[in-house]
Length: 179
Image (cartoon, rainbow, N blue to C red; front, top):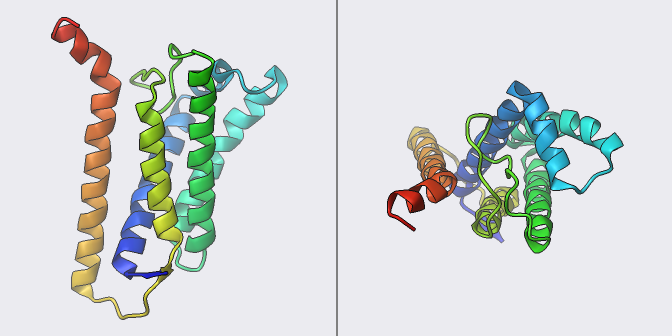
């Protein structure tokens, strides 16, 4: 299936920004991220440190590769696989009844407990990754197209940030209304 290049590039930019931001959070607080990896309880203790050091680098490399047209397809598939891997880790811990651990989604400044809605969020991001991996329709891109790409990416990221803030603050919001 061929998609409009605007959709493909905007999706790639949005996923790249999300991955670059995630990598940045992990690199700014490496010990906190290592604890989060350990809290998931999916790795032997000997692998927690190396995985915690490698994951932000992988996210950063994928983010950069998403912005390069020659590597976009492979990077988008890698991004989709990584997001689905994270969803799998969340799903396993939800299945285990471990909702009290921090998902590691909101960066060093905010804890976000595991909840099923995070699986939906990751599915949407994976969908963007798959869209970014699709083959573009052959057509010339103009200046207006560049504006639309930036605007579409910005809107997608703003919607993500709003949804993420609501998800992260949901327990506090319930307390405010007395639930």
